[in-house]
Image (cartoon, rainbow, N blue to C red; front, side, top):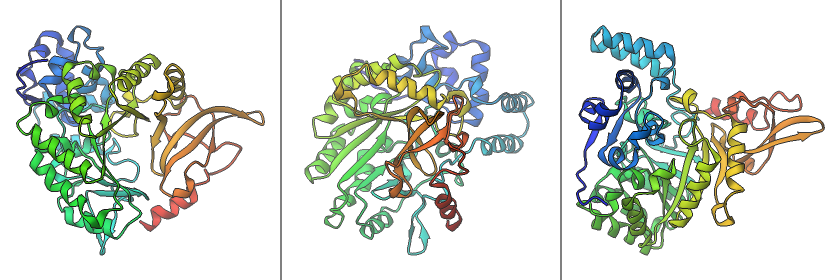
Length: 440
């Protein structure tokens, strides 16, 4: 493990200072970072560059693809537009118009996030908060809406492009606390982003301590969605406020709250450094549970052996495999998406190769507008080949665990691509969902 942990961040403005970029990338790959990075956010740090990317395997290295923009992440016509605009050095205001028009076509806020998940308190919408499922509230603390490095697939890319109209953020913890007091059925609060673990310990304490109030005894679990374990593990080893941070976590667990990290781990390579192993030990030593999740993505982890190895390593390190997701219908989905049937086959093949202790993982799951929908798998019913689906979570909790069927389609990559089986015009939940959208 390196003794020095200088934290260096590279973005579109200084990536030419990365020695490996100049050594390993050709002119076309270099240009792709400039062009795609103008539309989709790009940020990477020295730990990812030096410890995680196998530069001898570039451009095929999965962590390189996970963090560095690739030409095909933009559709050909979009890439050409931006490339020509940059070559012609058009005024920034004109470039911004082109970029914003492209971003608008990338479905920046999927699954009703901006319009249908935002709760209301005393007639005011709580921007930066989402309450889609009965028991769980999502909180986007305004100081945690960045990351140590940006994943190229991230469905929350609009959080990082500087457009206030697309960004979720909430600075007033008091409003969230008041909403929770009035909704005692909520048992879980998920701090998300961005990455809340980019905040200083003192800033994070200001957000978290109010949730320890006796008036919020019904909030049993505090979750923190984070990529920091694999993108900056030194946060939990020897950062300037590591001890203060671990003390905060200890305070939460000793107060009787269940504190869980929802760790985004996309490839086994992220779990193999000495630093990440030590970080996990330090987090777990104070009673924090770590659950892992990732979408399945072409070019990165679309092989059963990758998932098998990842789950086995996670269990060995004391982590709990939690979710395999389908890449969401936003951003560069066309580049990353895996057909639902293929994703199910990969999940099945990986699942059968691990022991029961790793079979806590659920999926493949689409976090779609109506809820988290599991791909149960193909079946033949009365001679008709269908795809069986099931709600893990639902906008209406009565939908949960209610199976339904779509026509078999080996090319479908998202719920919107599927048609109801058996000649039905709608899936069972659609009428209620449409009425709910109208009300909002």
